[in-house]
Length: 101
Image 1 (cartoon, rainbow, N blue to C red):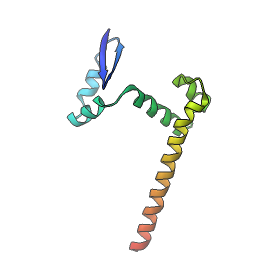
Image 2 (cartoon, one colour):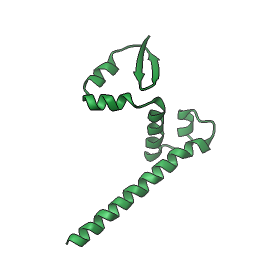
Image 3 (cartoon, rainbow, N blue to C red):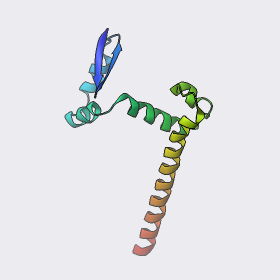
Image 4 (cartoon, rainbow, N blue to C red):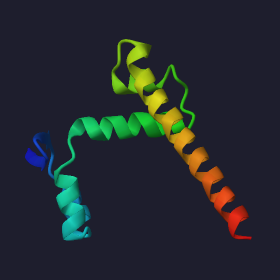
């Protein structure tokens, strides 16, 4: 079984060469950034994107292995914050366009 290191985390899995082929297509900067990511960051991204893509809130905690729905609400809050930021940016761009006309 091969070890594939991502940051400080090491994942053991059968080696199929796919990770090496995929990372070979990345720039040096992208590979450096990927090397700084840990498994928790991937889980958090998955949880946040699942919530953003309307995966039912009773399913997300099961996939992530959360015992409590309260733990999963972190991802809902992250998505709400993103929506707020995107909405604020949108209205700021509209206001700027109105001023320049």
